[in-house]
Image (cartoon, rainbow, N blue to C red; front, side, top):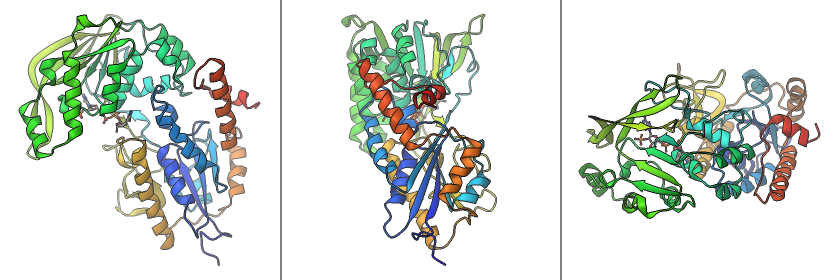
Length: 468
Ligand code: NAP
């Protein structure tokens, strides 16, 4: 009998999710010489690319050019894309075991972490993840409402997502026109009343999670000025000692940039919006008005404290401060969502795995034929490129298992059987050629408005555009 991976018996792999980790895994599988591997990629959305389409900020068009690489991968003959197909609803784990030798979960981190403070669920308090999905035209979030009649907004956290949210709140209409922001958001943000945005870090400037190009970029906005407080951006003893122990030019530069913002005086600018970046403060409560709407954010001032290992954490003092804001976005990290039937580590918010092999939490042994890649494997850290070595590690484990003959034993390892099943379960699935048509149409709609792209933001619209 020919071995699995030969031309007559290709290795059949299902990848769930179609973001960077999914595509990099597909790329590494498809480039194996001397092995016939077929990859079917599934996404619950009609469109591919995960966070590259739904997460990367609309004014970061350059970052999105990575989709050219993904396009190249997708046009290989042994690759197929099935959009609009949801795991657990249209396809179950049993179905996949019936059809594939190996399954890769690359579903990312679809929800947010909570701050765990009173008032977090008041009207006007939102997870940044929802705002991001909304401004990027994610079909599930297009109907969300954000009260942009407010004058002051706080963004909790000082990572790159927090910076994205703060920056988008500060952009002018002219700046937004040059982006692929969803058209309904362009209108909403153009009418926005926001005048002040507060970015809140619980530790100091040297510990801020955002990266230097991103913190520099906010200093160059057309309609908003950036400020920090001198007393919050100066070097403290613990941070300086940590830097001396582990010299790092990027951190030194980051603090310099933030100190530079402290030198700008409020009076010196004519810009209509202001972005304040604060450090060493933690929200302890969101206070609402009589209607249950966000009115004030209560903050405690922190100092840094070093643990035995040398890690610096925020320690609350007894000094409090009240910040009047009508909107709060918590941007304190993403979180993975469990998949039906797949072992999940609740506390870490990831699929329990070892180098990408899914691990059974009871036996601590690898689960045959099941793998994870990307944020659902390692947690929500790193940039798009980080997913490449991550996916390669997973695929190497898959190839090693193939060599050892450890894989699922599907009853119907034939490509045609997937189409047959989906025609019964979800006949409106989207193929890669469907996406290519939608992509061309979006760019065409953009050209008509002198914009890079105008996205389709509902499944109905997409079906209609395809004449279905
Ligand atoms: P992140 O980089 O992990 O930042 C999370 C921030 O939330 C940190 O400042 C963290 O502070 C803070 N935080 C956590 N819990 C908190 C709490 N209870 N109270 C107050 N603050 C709290 O996460 P992210 O911004 O969601 O980004 C996820 C990943 O995507 C990152 O690797 C990021 O670089 C990447 N990304 C990159 C880009 C880009 O390249 N332009 C854009 C967007 C996202 P502590 O450090 O004190 O924990």
